[in-house]
Length: 135
Image 1: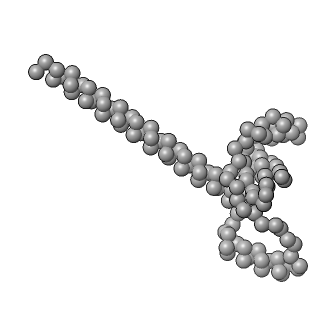
Image 2: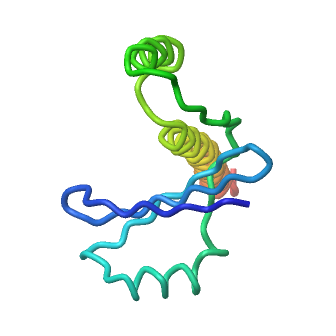
Image 3: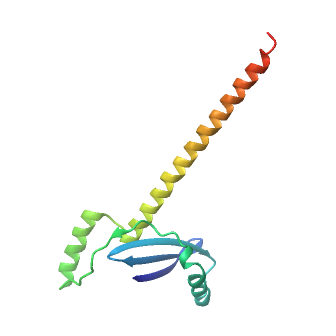
C-alpha cells in the first residue's frame, strides 16, 4: 500500500488530499483543515483520524513511465488530455465520490419526502373520518 498527503491552500481554507494506492487502484479523500496546519498537527491528525476517513471508490491507475524527450512528453500529454480531459486521477476519484454522495443524498431526500407525504395523507384521512363520525 502506498499513501500520500498533499496539503494546499484552497481559499479560504487549507485542504488536505489523502491518496491511497492499493493493488494498482487509487482512492482519495479530501479533508478541510481550516487554518494553516502545523506539521505536528497534520501528523497528529493522521495518527488519530486516518482510519475514520471515507475514501472514494477505487479508480484504476496506470504505472507512470518517463518519456524520452520533451517533445515526446508534450505529444503524449496532449493525447492523454484528449482521452481523459483535464484533471488528475485523484481529482477524478474525488469527483466520483461527490457524485456517489449526491446520489445517496437524493435517494434519502426522496424517501423523506415520500414518508412526509404519506403522513400528511393519513392525517387528512383521519380528520375526514372525525368530521363525519356522527352522521
